[in-house]
Image 1 (spheres, rainbow, N blue to C red):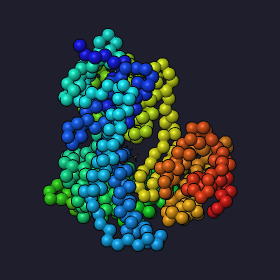
Image 2 (spheres, rainbow, N blue to C red):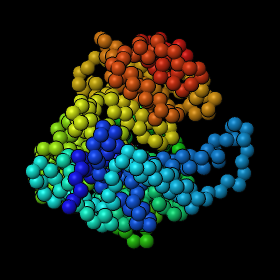
Image 3 (cartoon, helix red, strand yellow):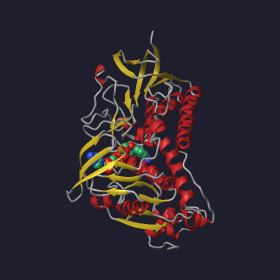
Image 4 (cartoon, rainbow, N blue to C red):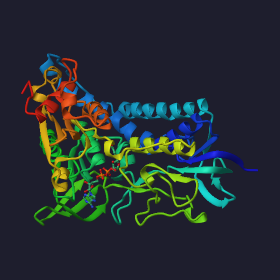
Length: 474
Ligand code: NAI
């Protein structure tokens, strides 16, 4: 007899494992099915984020930043270092250890919360009397029955037509984290989040990196002044970014030859040792068999859900990358918690207007809310205020004065509509803005809050003051 659970969660990434834990906290019996395998064939909970995304990329970003900093950033502090050498095997090994610590952490949390973990791929078998039967493939090889199903199957990297990922020469995010000797020339297609983060890692480690981007504007979704500043800084660091290109034939041989037309339409060729293709991701419903129960997908292959993450089937929910909205781990987590709470009869809620975005380059880029170009397009009357890190004492002491903080506030009510940061620790600084926006604070509220001195967060306060043209240190 198949075991029955109140909730069966399909997928153990940030959307799924967090939903499982929250449902268990709320007193439900919960199983979580996940297929990810580590190098030894064992389970590796945490999904793309933990295994081949957020976590390993941040480990590599940190390590490569140390490598660059020790060579070029310490002399001005009076620290002279000679004979710096890269031990790439150690760096990759450390990254793998960080991943494993996170995998093991989730398994521990499942045990602690009494979540039953099943290792294998889940497929819908049938719906029967208000429950759903789910088959789990090897190594688990069993079936379970769930009263509620939460689908959190994530996404897969999008390949260019006729150029499949081989993870040796044509790399997705997975292969981009595994390159075992620094390529002399590295090509990247797509100047989005992954392209910029992975391009930065390998440039710092010594590769000559060229990024080809189809759109004519750099980081079109980012506030124009922040994107412009970032473009300038990345170019200065040595990332060659070509905008407005049209990719043509790609030949994979000993290396990779990319034919493309540049922004003026002239034919160009880029010959590289390896090519990262980071042109977005597609929802993953591989092996799920949605047809077995009549689960609806939308035209783009996402599981169709309403604003509460409800699918077309009673008691079947979907969260994270496999549904509409930004493909961000923290968005998936919030949806997972909200769904578990709704199943328990509570009123879980996700505020999509205050989901922060971060690009972990150096300097980091982070933002929340509307960009200036969005406000203009919507005809919203707004006030803007900016403050450069150049004028921040802590940034000067750190030796990291690039970038700025920018506030956008409603012209009439002063409510904060967006905050945009490019600069040191932008990923941490953005939290203050998220909290402020959740509480519907005004720029004046932030301007009147005491911020510790000397901290980078004073730049946030000063940008809020600048909205009312009364920045003190600039
Ligand atoms: P992305 O959507 O961030 O960027 C893809 C870029 O490729 C875009 O600029 C697009 O215009 C360009 N592009 C598309 N087709 C192209 C073509 N044929 N030729 C040239 N350029 C082309 O996607 P990315 O970087 O692959 O990341 C995938 C997802 O993973 C994103 O949704 C992102 O949110 C998420 N992610 C988030 C991270 C973070 O929060 N720090 C880190 C890494 C990934």
